[in-house]
Image (cartoon, rainbow, N blue to C red; front, top):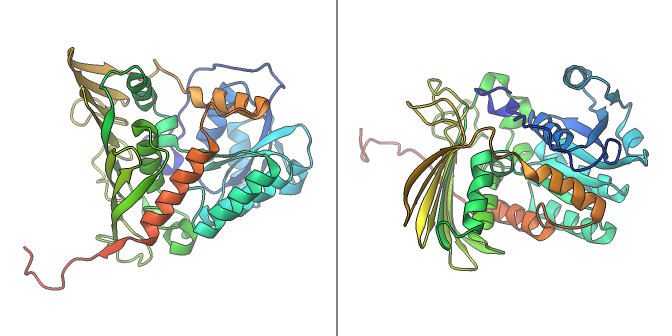
Length: 366
């Protein structure tokens, strides 16, 4: 796990198998983002057996095989899709390719598990929705900033148990370190990565729908900017948005690629959940100037103030739930409706965003 490099951040948990060996065979395809390692780690810890890997880049495949000895390198994607043992394909392709790849996987009779963001255009979303309905296959998404963060998992449990009453507002902060020299070329091409609200903003919108219990929402306002990386003209290094949920809850979130080098991790991700009877703050990856350990949860309610250190104590139940959903055709890990709604809202936030710029004169300040 590379704590200072978000692109290769791949959490590892304790084995918690929900199936016997051989009961759930899966494959990996599309190794463009390091999140594929976190996705595979989670599935394997839940009892999944990783059989195949495919990517057109042999260097990426070699590195993957070093991490997962015994996995077979496929000569083509079709070799994986023709294997009747494979029940799910996990993929972290270039973002603009994730939707079309998912449709191909679903039409082969297999479930699909993609890295976020799941789409870069609304027409991709609509096409995938039709294919999922026609095939009955799953289009699952790795929203890692909730699913692979123990403090976020525990916050969901606290909300379910009524610890802070009804959630009325979600504040999300998703800063990331750019590490521009290590990024692939597609990362700086707007048509390929989709824009900052579509990309890392998708984490924030998914969390809002989940924590606030919304089935739908409106994007009231959104902004994007390139404040500090003009050498990459298609990059957006800042974005924010305000949403109103169908149940009256609200959200504000900010995402950026402006994390300074002095921070001990790749981003000081935080979430504040305001309820009618209290509030929760998540300091997901670091508690700055206090502890380099992540997964800190602060809880304030009628019983007092508490700080909980949750690293290694909660686990990642999503992956086992996803495996069982695939086997039993249920929706306990995450509903398809929820996934597609989160994708739709981040695409709308991106499409309708106002572009912010520094003024050309100094009339607004120094």
